[in-house]
Image (cartoon, rainbow, N blue to C red; front, side, top):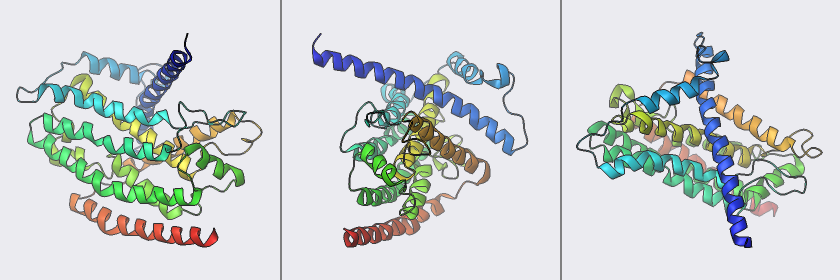
Length: 333
């Protein structure tokens, strides 16, 4: 067997295992959200499917598969069917470069470790909106189209502030390599959330908007758009959009952990490298809990206020934060 073929097989096996883990995590994240929302609202949540309701994700999957798959007669047949798969595929692409921990020899636990890992994540995150936009347009219905337009405008408005917040971290770290950003924080146990707290807040807000989560879930506003961009979808294609949404939640939480919260850095992680994976997952789980907490607490914003907040508040603050960070880094170095 040639070295190239062997490398391809190894990468394919790693990718398959990682996709299985991520998809399983999505399923139980959805169950955890229903449980936590029930806890906030003094309800019980899913309990009937399996012990403590642990089989509820499997029951939901079977229900979606068994439902009739309807395609509107006026829809573009090819793009209408490809849009959900595109949304899920772009959501999974980010995990190719995310380091989940550190091996005993110091190498990151990741499928790939490119020098421009942060730029890759920003690029992949930017094209994720195409699945939603194409799905809303291909449905050939006014409500999905309005939801798709809202999602596109929201992405453009908040992506700028997110990019500027991330650049602040890159200036402090002096690299775009994700593993080196994590090791830079682990070396002195000073996470970048401390010098870049404003950047962290900007990233947290824009990441919530990027994933169309409450209070920024305007592309799905039921009271205004029936169900938004996925109104005309049913069965498994309807569920695929939610797979993409929840995977994106995990993705932005993982990126926040890497850039601002030290990745796998934590107590005893230096002596026991396998603990880096535990600390990384614990931080991601905490951020996901905050996502659910916000959904249970905050009302949906009005759309004009959503756009005004992005352009008139977040973007100027992000620019100011970047200027101050650049000045401090230039002075110190």
